[in-house]
Length: 309
Image (cartoon, rainbow, N blue to C red; front, side, top):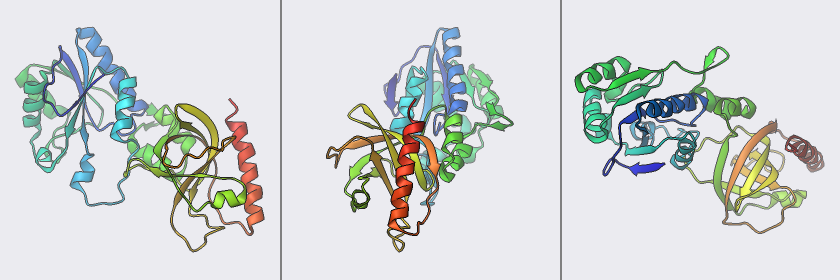
């Protein structure tokens, strides 16, 4: 897949385009991307995705609590896996947000890309204040001579799969349900940093993780059975997210720490990726350190059982 940071130098043959943020690149997004690829093949053209960086909500909002499922790097990898030919990452800015919908169509889709056909998601909107919707782009298409196709949302049960729904599931720690809608196990990339070595005292040394993406949504507090990837090798592990209420009742700081099974290397400063497979339990305060140690041993046994396949 060719990736363009901005639109300069972009060239494509009979491009079939879709536009969106694609946070999580979940099963609903894959349904849309698969349709773009299929339509491009039918037309003898190339599949093209347009997305934006940073996320428009970061630029347009002063909400410091904003969190997302994927960084731009993760998004690129997932879009490439969907078989897209070309990805354009447009720098999002206040001025771009004020561009009327039909001007965006003319400047970017027509003049820059030379769009032949566009495929839109069920809730797609763009342009100034989101006024550009399917009917708007259909009217623009008549003026500039390209095709428009709108897809219905992909459902799981009675509910349309969406990034909003998945973010809520991840936030509350419902990783089984979130992974089902994503179509893959939720990922966290980061760097191993030095912690307070409390896990070592308990007999379960952990690697503390600082997320690589400042806006990465961290799953709800608790213990998870995970796979860790270090130097392209996969290790079984269990991961804790929380504020250590048993050991540090007065410390509200939230930590992410992973105990990698059968592993004793020094990995401070190393890049690490975690694949969340199962949630074992929520976080809670134990009466004694011995009770906590006994529970951690149970967590390890359960993690090994779940990860056995």
